[in-house]
Image (cartoon, rainbow, N blue to C red; front, side, top):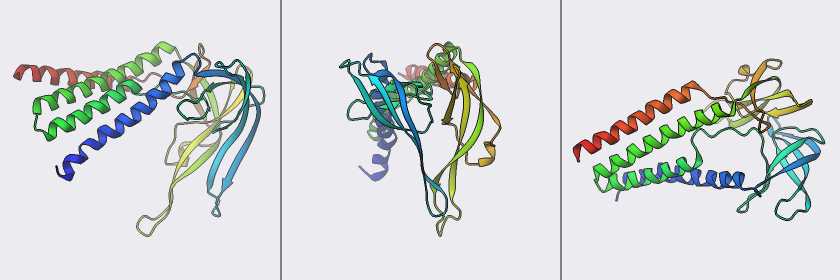
Amino acid sequence: MDLSSLLLYIPGIVIFLVGSARVRTWLSDIRSDGHAAATVTDCKHVVKKDRQGNEIFNYHNLTVEYVNPKTGNKETRALKSPSEFTVGQQVHLRLGTMGRGDTIMEMQEEPLIHPVITMVCGALLILLALFTNQHQDVRAMVCLSLVLIGLGAGLLLNYGSLKKRGLTELDAVITDVYARQISKSTKIVKGEKFTYYPVVKYELNGVTNTRRCIVNSSSKKDFLIGNHLTLYLDEAKGEVVEKPARKTVLAAGIVVLTIGILSGLSILSVL
């Protein structure tokens, strides 16, 4: 087997590993003892810059208290978060599993493709590579059709889940911009590259919240201080997300699912 044949396995392996890691987090989230309500008891801002003034670290050291659902005992945890919280603010804590530490459940975005679908598609891509190398074209096409059907169904599931949540708009104001350096200037590539993240403030239940958003841009001009940014509130869960149900996701899901079904039917016609 030559190198080009082995390279066909890489996308499937990577997607499968990413999906399996996200499945573990998803399973932790749905377990009754996988999360807990916590109270912020301390929050300190930590910023470290290099000699050129570029930020290396920018996060908040949090101390939270919560009742461990497994033991019933009150515990204290020190955590790092990109967002600022006020003392006394209630937060949701994801309890660590499989060696992972506890984390704050903030800005929980609905996954574009469900973790289980991602993992299954990764496995199908591995089989696709195997059948392609074995010149089993029909089985390879079946795998490809199932991948397309899975991706299309995943996009439709994302749209439906967000639509069902009934998100309401939440006005936020950009108060700062966090610049993360992604590459340095070299002899070959001139100029340093940065990714910019807006830091916003918004009112929720009478409390002022400060968060560094997930949305980002390669241009700082896209996030001018003082401009307004729309976030979205899930009132039932008390969660804030950045992206609502998008019609582009719905359209893409329909197209990909249709192509997958048609390709599957075309395979049946030649059997």
